[in-house]
Each structure stands twice: as structure tokens, then as C-alpha cells.
Image (tube, rainbow, N blue to C red):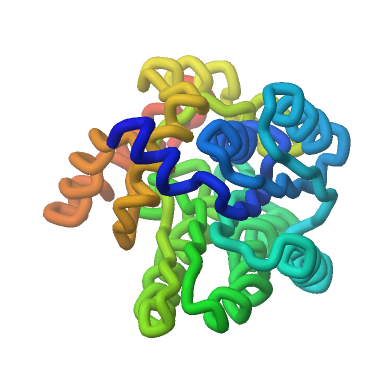
Length: 286
């Protein structure tokens, strides 16, 4: 899709992006503003989200920062209601805020699980419940829930992340079936490997136990992660095409297709990867 088409799709639209202080959310916000959208950036990281909004405004874009915890349903509803009251509508809601915990399942505490559920899954629920009534009334609007490739294909070492992101995919597909009757679109956005600070900043990702962080970073780099800015442009192109599940970059579709055709292969390769990391990197005796 050309940049001109992207601008036509988002120019003068009102977009709300959660998790906008860094990574994918920040890149999406910047690209939306470049396309002429009026962007509301929301994040729990106050200084980061304000800095992101200032950068957009300095570049000539329209941006406002809001400090909000997506795990707080009342706060999310208040934010969306304010956007509708001051701007007249919300055209796009990007439920993008997320958190991750890396490590073997038994290294996860119940608090780790609750935080992943509250942010990754319930954050999307809170955003939808806040925006959907307005969109339903207007019979127009798009909700984009950021899931993950790990929500389509299980990956050892991130059980809470996989479980919650799988839930986001299922939730999005169900909501899409209902919302289409009112002219509202719901899309599950599933990033492949994208270059974000999720393993660099404990505010976004926490590594538990003796998981080898440097080894993981090295392997992730070997997968040639897509820069967040390029991902944002491709993701917005995908949103305008309105698929049920948007997997970006497109080549991760091949892995997803393999998982759907031969799930036994995913089970085998995941078990092999776990044993290799446990024995060769972590020094375990299995």
C-alpha cells in the first residue's frame, strides 16, 4: 500500500494509542501523526509518553499525552469519554499496552500472571468496553488489539505472555463477529519479531530465574527484528486492509501456516529448544 493511501486512510481521524511511551506504541503514534491523524498517546509511564507527544508536536503533528494504567477500567473509560467529548468521536483505538515476563513457568509468581492478565488481556477488554459504545452509536470505528506472534504460535519461556496474547487473538475474533453488524471493525495485530525495548526495560519486560538474557538477545537479533518505525507503517497498511488477524512482517505467516498444518512440529521444536537452552546454556541436568 502506498503512503498516499495510508494518508487517505488516517488523515483527520482521531486515534487513541495505549502503551505509547515506547516501542510499537510510540512508533504507531508517530506514523499516525505523519499521516495526519489527531493522536492521543496513553501510557502509565508519564515522562515517556509526554516526551513522545512532544516529539510529534515538534514535528508538526497533532498529539496529546495522557497518563493512564490500562489495568484500571474506570481510568480508561474516563480517557475515552474525554476524547469523544473534546474531539467528537474516536475513529481508531489501538489497544497496544503490554507487558512480558520471561522465564520457566515455575519461576512465574501469581503476581506475574495477574499483571500479564490485567495489562495484556484486560487492558484490551477495558479499551473495547470504553470505546465500543461510542463506535456502535456512530456505526463506525476500528479497534486494533495488539496481540503477538506468540499468541498464534506457542514459545517456551514466556507462558503468561503466550497465554494472554492468545486470549487477545480469540477475544478480537469474537468481537469482530459481533461488531461488524454495527459497522465497527476489530483487528488482532500480531507483530513478529520487532526491535523494541521489551527486554531492556523492566517497566516493559521482566526476566525471572536464571534465564540467559544475553543469549536470548543474541538469538533475537539473529531473527533480524524489524525496526519499530518500519513495522508501524506496515501495520497501519494492514489495518486499512481490515483482516481479522494482521501478522506483520508478512513472512511470519509461513511459520503460522506450518503451526496450523502440523502442530506436532511446533510441539517438537519447542521442546527441543527448551532442552537445548536448559542443558547447553543454563547447565541443567534433565
